[in-house]
Length: 523
Image (cartoon, rainbow, N blue to C red; front, side, top):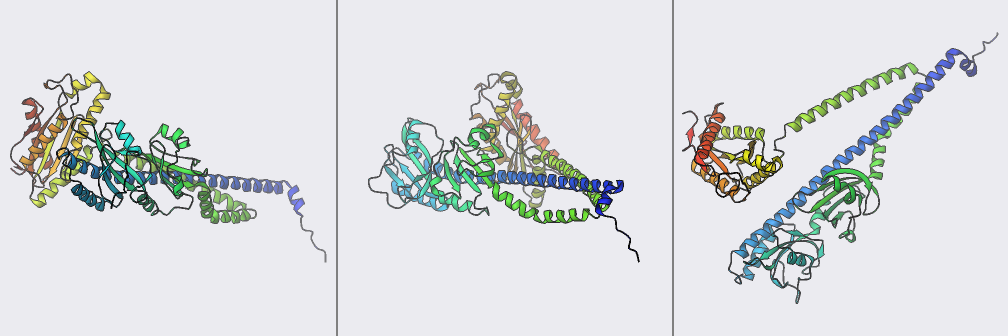
């Protein structure tokens, strides 16, 4: 029996068909390798971008938490300041003031203590136990600051050791003035560093991920997970302060941390209210390790697919076509999601210039208030507000000053207390509105007059107004309605308030007018 000689690999490769198959196979494998390498690179970049977005959101969350912490502290200091200033000079009851301070401290977990020092630095009242014997605080940084600065804003200083307990605390101080405007002492609130340490530890972060709270001058107030020896460091030469914060108050990037030199993916936010900066950073090495772990299964699968491609080239080509189609579908889906996100952003409920509710939120809130009023049987009041002679103001001062005027007026209106159930909105242009659920006509008129006085008290110069004081003023018209749950309730209420507004204007502006007693929408 004779045996048939099997073709060798070399003979197969020497044939045109063999060479074509070999070349096609190699090109296919190379193409797949390149495609997978590109996919891995894109996947890594997406992972980094996601980390940057998460870092910004985390920094924003911590900035809001820090603002709330110091805002509560500021409110406590302001209350104590009012208590002192309401008394005649020299008649401050130290024991009573210490009791008030202890009550304030017990309500705020972040507070280490509250203190009142006279102009020489002597302890007058405090919320902690006994004062250290012979201690004088005139040598503290905040004392020197308030001696030189006569403003009434709070001052947040670098971390210090408390002289009463030895704890690490952040001093938040407020200058006291005598009736002549001279330096009359200091109110001090000390915020525990451990309060931020405990709050930051709530987050499940890797050991090398960082959260850093800093003053705007780059002084570290607390850095997680660094030891306390890092507190007080000056980071003014860091990439964050040298470049990133020069461009924007909020953002992200990748750089080596100034604290320990490790590469991290950072997000940062500068506080709008206080001189604070918060940065959140994810360790890039840990991020890469976690990404590799998440991609390990894909890498193994791709290796198996490459082995199969050596024998089943056609099937691989088909899979490539499917993969390309899927990528196109993903790109299309991403475009749709981007469009949806843009749509959602355009539906934002806040006016970009003033920070007040915009017209959309105004309409939704008024409609909802009328529905609730129908169920409860209580009235809804609406105050329509218009800045007097605003066109002349724009013509005289320019649109930039006009925008600033709108911001100042909105700040005055925002500062009014609406019992927590009302809404202050920018209605459009120089028009504003106050929605006042469960408010009678008399109450609404009183609030409208408060708004007139609030804007007037800002003394915004207005050279082209006919108002004798030559300052920016407003006119306000208010109306009150008992809802009948009909579609035209909103229209009726707005028309009544608008008519009252024009009544105020006809009477000379700089005043409030009312449509009269509450109207039944069905009448």
